[in-house]
Image (cartoon, rainbow, N blue to C red; front, side, top):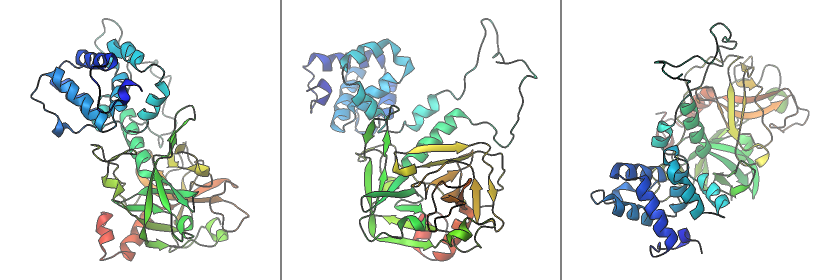
Length: 402
């Protein structure tokens, strides 16, 4: 058994004492130690912050092991460029277990404090100069797509991390059937055509993802639909109308608001949510008017073909409303299983509920990539329908639309 698998930790082992010594050397102040504890997701209220740091470090290691986060603590140390002096020694302590450590790194979203410390951009400062040097001469570069704009790296990273933990694969009868995303503590939004065949046993599977090389991290966390799972819904239209040049008339929005059996949005992240300081959270639906532009980026996070979570994007996306303004069409890639995915603009605002593609010759199949466009239901229309259908009901307050 590896030293970090002892429960409780055995501080008589040489490796455990060496890890403790390295942490004390790398985090010699209480403030530094507590910052590491916060990034690891430890409960700061359970740490004695008045004791010398060498005792605080042992408390942190003990709590981390007891909450199955000791490997996460090591991940935080090895991902901190400010601790390069102790990286080599820590890597020797976990030699042979690198794959396990890499898998642990994907189980936990970085804390907001860690994201805030990462640089948003890189600049070149020549020796002796008092300002950053441009990377190209003036006049040699220009804005060629104003609608695409620029994205702040830190903000993009944070919003993507939020989308990652709030989006789930929907499974019916043990098979992947689509995607959905959290819009309330226990409320999930998806397409009606994704869930209408559910006769019981459906689940939303969160955190289903892989390592960069394709190795499966884990199946993720499965949360069952509630017994009274369907809060409200709106049907879809005939496939010929859905994919026709004008799109359907207002009134058929192909959405389903699903109740899960747990308030997963207010719970912690990962397979062991109890005690996590970072909660999963949910998207707040914005029904205000939005003017789409063909040149703007359109991003989609979901489970194409049931695969582990993936991001697709297009810029320019060709974003355009159908004549009846009931559907948004774009050129961002999707596959069967993407139905019900959140569709984002460049600011990570949810602007549509992905629904299908076209043109198609197979009636009833809304998410086949057989044509030259994909489409979603405009989120403003979904919000308006929800407000009308749920008027006076508690679910409307849970959605933040009351």
